[in-house]
Image (cartoon, rainbow, N blue to C red; front, side):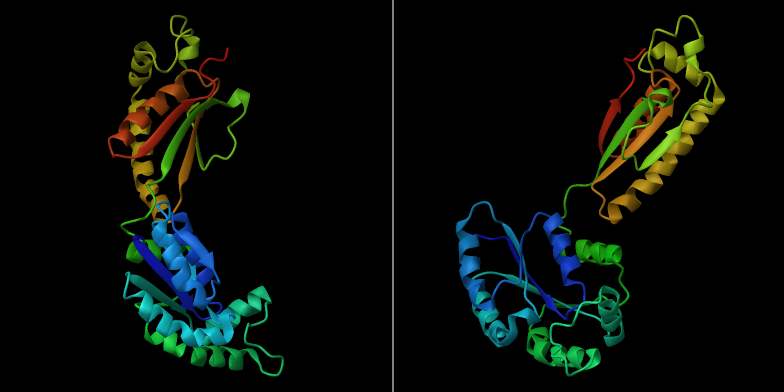
Amino acid sequence: MTDHFVILTGLSGSGKSAGIRVFEDAGYYCVDNLPVTLIPVFADLCTRSEDIRRVALVIDIREGLFLRDFPAVVGRLRQSRPVTILFFEATDEVVARRFGETRRPHPMANGAEDLQESIARERAVLAPIRAVADAIIDTSAFSVHELRTYLLDNFLAATRPASLLVQLVSFGFKHGPPEQLDLMFDVRFLANPFFVQELKPLTGRDPEVVRFLESRPEYGAFLARITELLRFLIPLYVREGKSYLRIGIGCTGGKHRAVAVTESLAAALEEDGLRLRAQHRDVDRE
């Protein structure tokens, strides 16, 4: 049995395409522009499948005359399963501006009417569908990121994807920084254990190196501040729907200071229940 069956519909230019991508990222099986008459057939196929548990469809004005069957088709479908209908809309001014930015013709334009007339005709055609919707979502004031957050918070809280994976990567600047970092911190201001003869062959994982660094007051102060900064930033990245956050910690060779800082950050952030992976790219390099 399908756990969640969602239909996204509404005005052209109201954000349905952005909305369906949010559901797709949340693990839904998504279909755009499925013919209305095929919805019951598709729903039955999903019921028989063990792999398709959550479904999201986009149904809009491209269906033409078949849209008049939508309320009856959904009414019958709701007799056998729960169905959520989300109706997307925006003000005429916002819809017109979005079409102007994309330079795409409105799907109801016939060449003889202006954009405002096309929008008005579409509103009239979709009125019966709007009347049976479970939620009306006005996207006029939403950015793409704000729409994503709204959908996750209000319709996908129970099925939203796992929280982001934080990847901490220590490295040496003399070997070049890693690619595709979201944040990077340079810890070359810290005292360098490399110049202490007995510490030189060790790494930032060794307690002797950690004690050397901790004996400097700036080390603990820096760790406290960077940990506080990341605890502030990470929930904001989660709110924006980011799946991966890659953070680079660099010193000269990537063997002592960057490794020790990365290990300390990993231990602190793991206490917050974060999904976290620590990697030391250059720790074994000479």
